[in-house]
Amino acid sequence: MSTRRTPSGGESMDQVLAEARRREKTYRERALKLFPWICARCGREFSGKRLRELTVHHKDHNHDNNPPDGSNWELLCLFCHDNEHSRYVDEQWYDDAEPGREPEKPSTSYKAFAGLDALLKNKK
Image 1: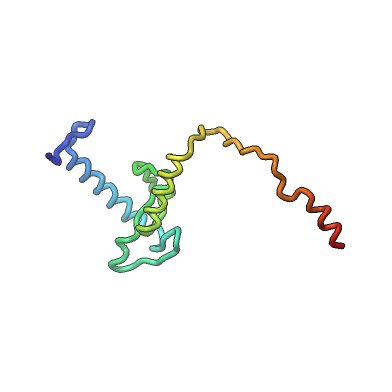
Image 2 (image 1 turned 180 degrees about the horizontal axis):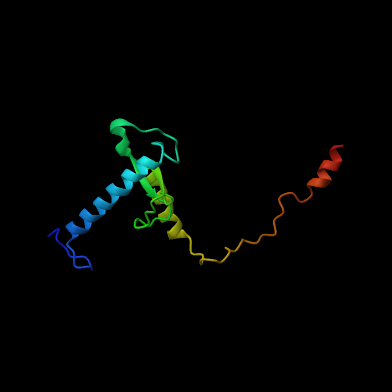
């Protein structure tokens, strides 16, 4: 099986991956200049060789949205970044609500504190 499959744009897979790595290197370098080297979720600090464990997370999950001010980025450690994407996938899998529509709240007739006021009156 060849690694030279052709994506829809006519480029080889190697070209697409090379372009993605080039783009990532560019925005990662900018993010590391803009933000402190701390995971935005767990607060761990990174420096030296461990700095490679700090990744750039796109808040809107769109890797093409790279504003110069870094407003779509946050630095996350590998573990928190993986967790964030897992949560996003889980949310998409289980969330069948339509955009702009409030989710329906389940109705129940159970009243957890019904009769509590009567019990409290008897204590006095």
